Image 1 (cartoon, rainbow, N blue to C red):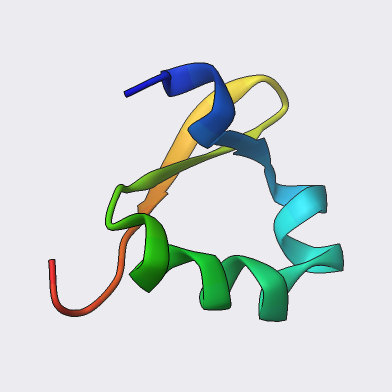
Image 2 (image 1 turned 135 degrees about the horizontal axis):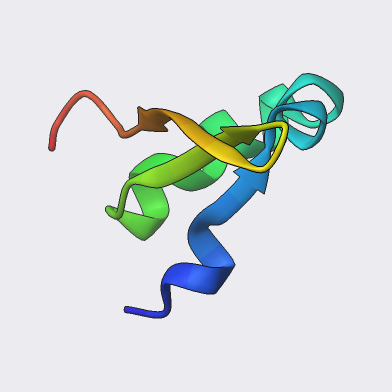
Length: 48
C-alpha cells in the first residue's frame, strides 16, 4: 500500500466527501486525514 495516496488534508475531505465515501469500500484501505500538516483522524469503511 502506498501511504502517500491515502493521506489527505481535511479540506480535501470537505470538498470531496461523497467521492471519498464512495472510494473507501472499493479500496478497502484506511485514509489518513490531516489538519495543519498533522495526522488527526483515520477514515475506513464499515466492513473493515
